[in-house]
Structures are given as structure tokens and as C-alpha cells.
Length: 270
Ligand SMILES: [Zn+2]
Image (cartoon, rainbow, N blue to C red; front, side):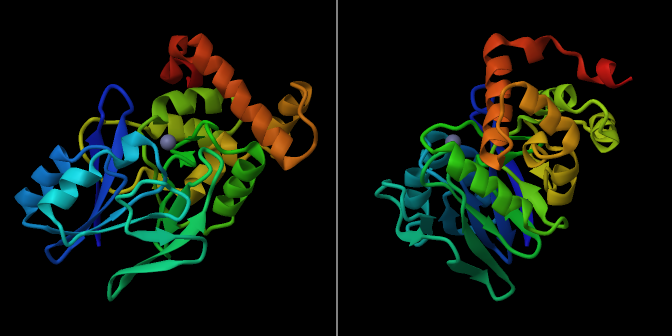
């Protein structure tokens, strides 16, 4: 199965729409737009078989209608809790969908960013929508921190080798926060030096691996001693939920103040 990330809502939300394709058949994850998807399908001679949705936000679902118009046989999969009427097959934890004879995806319930969020994974790949990002994680909107923490721990328990596909390209700003939180992390420093983001070019291949995220993404490392000590100092209790919440709110504050925009990442790691 080939996988390519098509940029969507560039300059506003900076999404990726992941297209999975093999033998003239294609599936898309979280189409917040449709034009670039339709162009890619036509250019590659692909028939859309299915649409996989992670949660209800408009930058993940707004392209469904136009894709269904062009490919009425394509099946729309999504979370059981998402009210969107365009979803035809409703999925919950432990469900499994078969795309081809050798490619199926398991469903993991990962609420927290929103209350309905699911992720898709198999032995090779993880599509985690807005739960985790490359070097970061989603904001808590309509979910709860208790659920969000459980979801993060579920994703952290998956194997390191999984190719990592999230729904947005926020790597640069996420790495700034990661470095601010954990400047002594050698793997993070190396990741910053190696990172070259070419967005909004299409991305052929994953953003990273789950193993790389576990080694460098602070939202998978909130209970590591160096990070935890700072969170306790910021008033966190010694529970996973409180540590995660304190870390997420720390980033929210910096996002709001624009403080990370001022930071020159490449300079800081030198
Ligand atoms: Zn979202």
C-alpha cells in the first residue's frame, strides 16, 4: 500500500489528507477538502473505495460530500459518536476494517481532543488524526483531559516501528515547544537538526515513526523525570492526567502569547 499526504487548508489549518492506494484503488483519511484529492485520483487513475474519518471537525470532513458525488460507491467510515450524517459505517474500539486482502486497519477509541475521536492502525501504520501530532498533540476541545490522557497512553503502548501519520503539519512549532521543555534530550536535538519540512509539498511517506515520537514528543514523555519535575513545579499533581493537562496548558499559554514564534529553533540547538 502506498501512502501520500496531500496538503489541505494550507495557511489556515495546514492539514494533511492521507491517501492510501494500491492497484487502482484508493482510500482517504480526513478529507477536509476535495479538489486536490480528486485531482490526485484522476492523475493516478485511482477509484476511491472509502473515506476514513477520525472526528467531526470541519477541517477533517468538509470534502466528503464532493468525494461521494464523484465516487458514489465509496464507503464513508467514521466514529460511532460523530453526528455527521455522511458517515455510513460507524466504528468503535476494536472494530477492524479490511481495505484489501493484505491491508486492514484496527480502530482505537482516542477521545480527548474531541469526545468522538478514533485512530486507525495496523502493524505498519498509525493514523491518529488530531490526538497526537508530529512532535506535539492536539488541543483539548470538546473532550476531557481524563480521556485525552488515556488516549495518549493507549497510543504510547503501540509498537515503535509504526509509521506515524497525523492530520496536521505543525512539526516546526511543536519542536520549539519540545526543545523548550526538554533541552537535554539528545534524540530531540538530533531530530531538530535533521528536520526539513517541505510543506505544502505532498509528503510521500510518514511524518516520523511512533518510536521517534516516543523519544522526542513531550506529550508522550510527560512522566519522564526531566519533564515531570517542571510540571510538578508548575503545580501539577503526580498523576498522569494532571501531568499531561499541565503540559498541554503550558503549550496553550505559549501558543496564545505567540512566544514560540520568536524562537529560532536551529539557532537554539547549536
Ligand atoms: Zn480537530
